[in-house]
Length: 469
Image 1 (cartoon, rainbow, N blue to C red):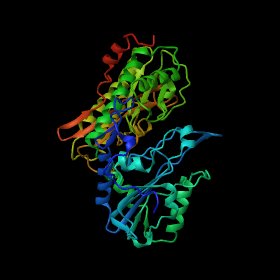
Image 2: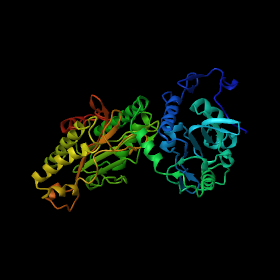
Image 3: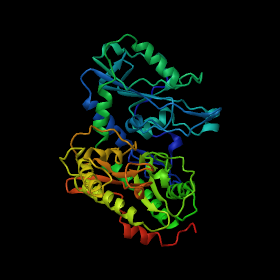
Image 4: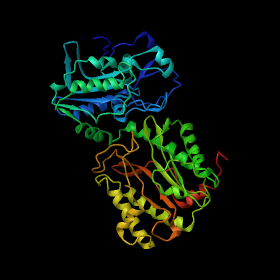
């Protein structure tokens, strides 16, 4: 079979003068990132998946589609997080097959994993950048067997011989580029070869991947710390720069400038900068309003670094000073958040922080007369307190008991829109405080503690001069 690549025991001449470090090819005096995850990380993840698979099974995962933005312009490509977690490949039009047991194909190939990826193509690489290719996929990603994606279309894989074929839900929004080996063709080929089979399952693989990804390795925590630190720096700079008369999009520009300046590749999600009435819209991201001194600004942001994203929220008074009503609501949320963080202990249920925050918010809103019945609390705090964090901002997990290595958010909020059934003095006050918490055997570690969250600390920082003045 052509273009099959095995683990190499020697380096080609083109690699003379380079070195392998942590299974990653490193160029001398590299001008690019040198803190990428090593090939051993992805190999370990593939083995962990293999260990969790049932006997005589195979897992098949496809890369993310290329998304069209408009006409002949595509969105910047972002790999499917599960695919990246297992392979380290950031290129589109790829598929990886992971077998529980080693397979032999007519005596020519014995392997327990195959990565099909785009072939080297000088013409296309001139326009869209260098492709890894099969040889470097083996060398750089540590994959046992790499083949060109076109070979998947005729690959001899008897899916009916397995007890289980593990897949995710079908990808449906895929355009046909008419290029041989594109994602559309890969999916069509897989559908044809598995048509009418009763052993194809979409249940087990998502659950297995959630179980693996909810526990962060040391390498992942290093990258998460970097992403979170960048995000805290952005919140701090915004506190210094925020002034009445600015627009929401100017505040967005400040935080995303700090992201890029510190080395982040992307925002991990559309930045939420909602002032005044917009502070009461949980996932507001239009960011076009002009801010006044009477507004509170909810800044819910996260830098993404090497695939891992932060998620940190601070709520700021645009004029630099909290009013009496704002202080009261803010302190309730802060008190609730601290109770939620304190409950992030090994062995507690995933939902324990939410129970802790909800109890305090309910009690305090009843005292203020903002609600009359405990269940009315959901009018003003209508979302969960926590989610897992990692390659996705809402990372997969099993939502069972908290374990060492979990990274979750704690983000209670109170949102009182104009027209709410309470005294109008509370209207248009929206407050959310969110931190990223690492679960350890020694108790919770607040990874985003660098960004101030107490009223006096925020007001003091907002008096300092910003680099943007």
